[in-house]
Length: 108
Length: 157
Image (cartoon, rainbow over all chains, first blue to last red):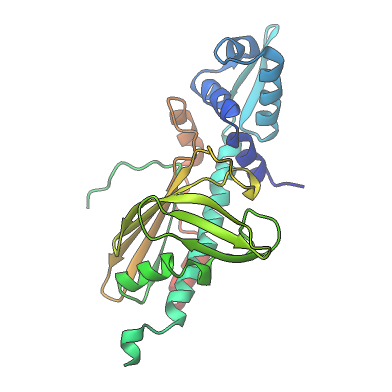
């Protein structure tokens, strides 16, 4: 089962989804409002929103008869945490490599 | 000490190494295959070798055990021994990036210290910045602590 971090990365790798994400991050809005701002059909927008919601990048709340989509900061926090862990491990290994080999000039 | 405007959503991590900047730079770039986490590759099979072409526009590439090569980043700053930066095209769960994939950015700076070099890495531009990004900052920008692995390493040096 993929982690939420991987899901968030995958969700944002798609250009259309990224556009939708940026739209709702700017201003919470309904599916119809999103569909009028991107060149894809309303069902396609709904599909993208579902992926973004599963990745916890957007949240939805009812407002009268409409469902309003807005930013959910949890997915991004996880995305950031993923890269933080990744680079911490990578730099640690890097520093060990620097320390474990003797520079040529010091061998002489 | 003046601080440049920072994007709190960026990933920042750093480490001190007991070597001069030119060597620290060399190990980070030409020597990347010696320290790169072997499980982090985008092609199928096992990672055989990973490398960085040493010039602006150069590719970050990997070759698997079947001999297939692909690239998932490009050098955007090549300024030894001070700075190295590249685009980072790997998006979905370490899949092979599309040829037209947009990248986030990894910037590595090498600063001499009394005992060696301070290596600072910033990974930012996760393709989601824009007018709406301000709303996100409050949610994700609070944690500025050093990752524990780096702290342990610094203590051991």
